[in-house]
Length: 388
Ligand SMILES: [Zn+2]
Image (cartoon, rainbow, N blue to C red; front, side):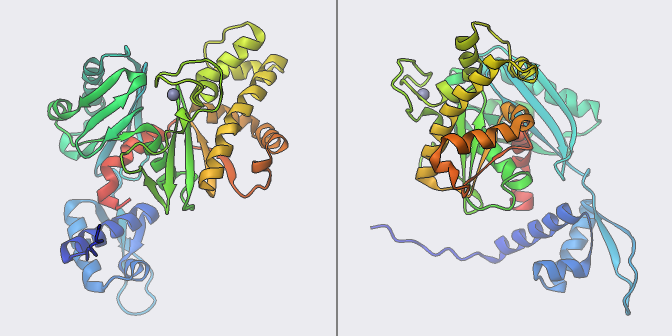
């Protein structure tokens, strides 16, 4: 029998939480007065005053003049010093690494993208380290001012032990990031790509105001991040959301997971280009080329899109039947291009799929795409600081 222990939050945890909530208010509003914090957060004046003193000493906030008085003492305006510290997000995919440097408000200060050889994680990480050091040097930022580095990885991740358990697309199993963290000299955080992108949508994007959301990450494969009660839900063994490997076809096409007929074989970025190739006989190098053809009015492109959406919606319907989310966010680079043809998608999906016809479960395109994962990575080191 399992007995649920009611864990009471202790004084120390309350202190940490109060500080995080005060910082979160500064991140949200930038300039606030002491009384605003008291009212907004329901904290005592003593608590707010001692936290403000601490944050001023640490240089995370500064005083920026005096507000108009409504009688009594004139209130001091306090401003968030959003550039006091920085965070780094890194998205590792099979052939490419994307990296961003952000401030504490998640504004992108700089970014870096480079190609890597797939299959040699240690060589990839050596390059990542080199590029991180270069980025910090370029902006004259000492490592003591960097909160940490958050990695987005396309696989099953043990974020407590910093191990990539399994990533078929990267050809990696049970890879420990301990040596990399030591060499880097910065706190390191790992998370699965779809989960971390869903996390970015939760803090910065389409899921900000929603409780139950499914984020579909369409890249080389298809992964999903599940948001339940406004938090990313990873399942008992951190494998939840692997809908990309749900079987949707009897076609004898083998997947990287070893099974056949998986959704990602028909709904990934690659799959769209493959549908086009089967229809037209032409090979297109990337999504840009595909959507260029679309704007020129190619009928083959239209047909490929129809085939693609048929498969995409089979998966979405299955997810809706099982989880009934408030919102489904389509993410990945493809979302950026699909935004240009949004009316086409909405009409197409309703026309052909009865389950989605009711309009209860909203399907939206990510506005953060294609940066959701790398932004999510940069949010990981800030998680405790702002209690995200
Ligand atoms: Zn599969």
